[in-house]
Image 1 (cartoon, one colour):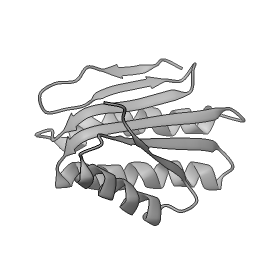
Image 2: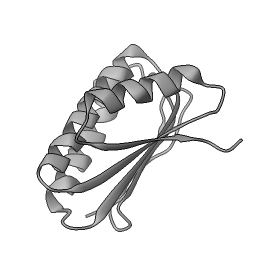
Image 3: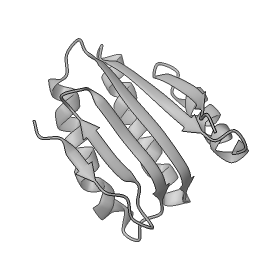
Image 4: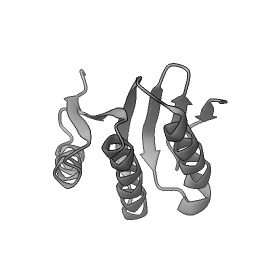
Length: 128
């Protein structure tokens, strides 16, 4: 399976999904003009990947410094997909990475942690 790599822009995060290493990353800011269009290939790739992965640990690093309400909905959908995979026996670990002084991002991570209890979601403070 080909890896997925989307470069960051002013409005979109960097997407780096490496299926060979089982490391998936979304880093940056997320407020694309057309959110459905931007995230469609991300969900398509992820769904196919999760079907193929077996006993390996999958590490998903999420480091968003800013995201709008539309992106928040996408994150909910993304975490639902990951939780479904976990419920099917896949080993998915999500690292929610936030800056020390960024209380908002920490709070979002805590809310996602509460909403998705069978998903292994770590809240990790980034070293400054």
